Image (cartoon, rainbow, N blue to C red):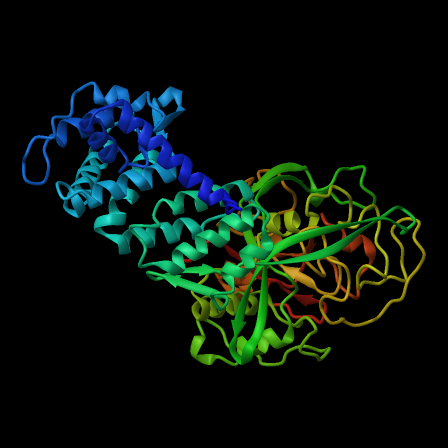
Amino acid sequence: MSDVLTPEDLKIQTAVSTVEAFSKRFSKAHLDFACHAAFPLALTPELAYHLWSTFRTDIEEKPLNIPWLAVADFLLSDLCREVEPELELYEMDLTVRTILLNELKLDPRLGMKRIEELSDFLLNYVDKELRSPTSSTDIAEIHKLIALGYVKPQEAAQNLARKLQQQDWGNYLGLVQVASFLETFTEPLKDFQPLLSYGRGIGKLGRGDFKGATEEFNRFHNRVEIENVLLTIPHSFEFETPTVNRQGQIIKTETHSAQYFIETLPGNIKLEMVAIPGGTFTMGSSEEEKDSYDDERPQHQVTVPPFFMGKYPVTQGQWKAIAIRNDLKVDTDLELDPSRFKGDDRPVERVNWYECVEFCKRLSKLTGRDYRLPSEAEWEYACRAGTTTPFYFGETITGELANYRASSTYRDEPKGEYKGETTPVGQFPPNAFGLYDMHGNVWEWCADDWHDNYEGATTDGSAWKYSKDTNLSSSKKEQNKEKHGNNRDKMSRSPLRGGSWFYYPNNCRCAFRYINLLSRDYRNDVIGFRVVCGFGRT
């Protein structure tokens, strides 16, 4: 009984047959050209003819006698296929390309010296192409990386790691594409196995093979560093999110999954950061939404890039792990235990905006990532998680779904228990992005300056800042000037989002914006925060 061929075996067998068929149909000189043409990852006729005219001899200057027609014969053969007709762009099957490059390296007339010459050729070609106004920057970048892979592998590995660092974990097609691209570097970057393994994991994640991805990522401990580029290790988790009707009855429960990474803080305290996929949403509320306010309007479309957000509000345990590190201090001292309601797994409260920013700066120094407060747009986008209802659970909210003043009602739901204090994070169901406690428990600071409405608001997801205190009344401006001089930043105000254990259901709506009139210096046992960071390292 013959052995059953694996898909990989079949792929290699097909590639070998394709190369053999080309060799039988054409001359040895044609095959020599094909080996050279396999070096770039993508080919245009112009680049192919440049290769032909440049490499007319072997490394000892003996003629290869490659006919001019070999270029056209190659491009029209089964060795490559046209992928972008508008650009006349051709690609070769990865396995076919590997076979031809191996043949070139093993050929004593060519060998590794010719590989190095091809690398130099491609780098020079890219340099000229980038100066051309009609060139494709993406293609030139690909050529550059391929060339660097052989002559400057460390630089190539660093550039590829940066590409991986910027990937949106929610864009599965993008993950598959970048992983496939990384496969082409298996040979030149064979000394960078962590990078290649990470790429395989990303590819499996993109294909939905979470078990296979986990096996690859388990080779690392939460993070891997490639040539000073920090790559996070994604984990996956599944969870259920209920939807309720106006009576507060659960009408359906959906299972979701999300990716996250773990930041290990001093004292082995874990901070879980969930990947929020990029997207476009409608920010604010309509006039028809019950108990909505004018400062939530006009509704407007906002496109938010992907980012990471804390799975929970920052806990007291996490706060202490950073607050105790005075060696990380940037601007402000941090009180070690500011909260009224004690418990390491409860959200930290009684922290003002400046202290929360200081926490983020210290965390950034410690980890090498850019931690910060979320913008209002990021916060609302993450809270809604694809929904358009007042709450991410639906038309109303109940005491079974969040910690707020549940003795009051929003719609037709029954009254619930008013707990009168914070609760440990994660006790209530998450939203569809896998975020907990976005409704209730503690208000959460945002990075923006306060604006009375959304007229002229940013639409790219960034924090909306102003340079002067234009949001204050003239009398308030005079008071500020008299009391604090020109220190406008100290008296500027930032919005709070999400509601809290003390506040009413209306205040917990996705669109509700709370302004604290006592400025960013204000502390209260209803105010906490949550951190975000971008896809990448600063």
